[in-house]
Length: 235
Image 1 (cartoon, one colour):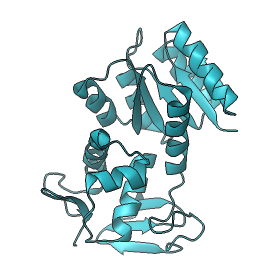
Image 2: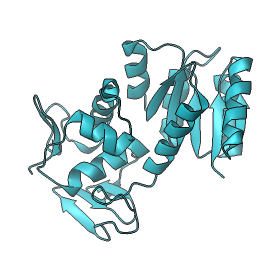
Image 3: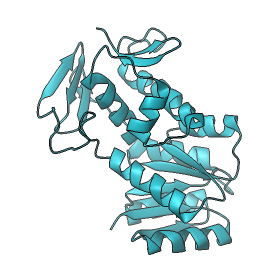
Image 4: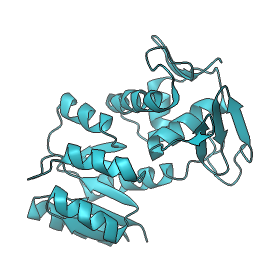
């Protein structure tokens, strides 16, 4: 039973989302403030965090950053503010996805399922983790990608990658040199079909470059092909 921590200050939203998630088989803990959410995180040990941006005290962006400093579990921003700048700032803080309130139970449930699947990335060709091409560690320059263990290391040091970052890197590196559009990556990695959410891809690429590249301004691994999308290499 997946465990979800909901950090939300609105009692009506806490009640409605909590009911919707429990009906879908989730174990749910709720917290009304950022401080309470961070404390609950350590005791409850959720599989996923649903995080409001507009919180009293420590705001949602700071909560997201603090979670990312210690944990790599999926984080979905749950916000009433759908402005591009708010969403992008949240994604750059380390969130894996976002949902604009009010969101129906079906939409929220689908996003949660997709985020949890990203925590155990599947093979990009056939969609099954068990049949991954990947029962080996592949080396690309100073990066080592162990697809079986789901570990990426640089110069022998393991990298702390969020689920979306890890799955994006696994997907791109499985076909090094091949160019993928943002829409394709959105569909294959995030399991979204709405092209307007392509900013998820761009924000994830920026975070990933900050971790795997020596100079993110001159990426060696996650490269932009202007007018088309992204590719891994060529190295």
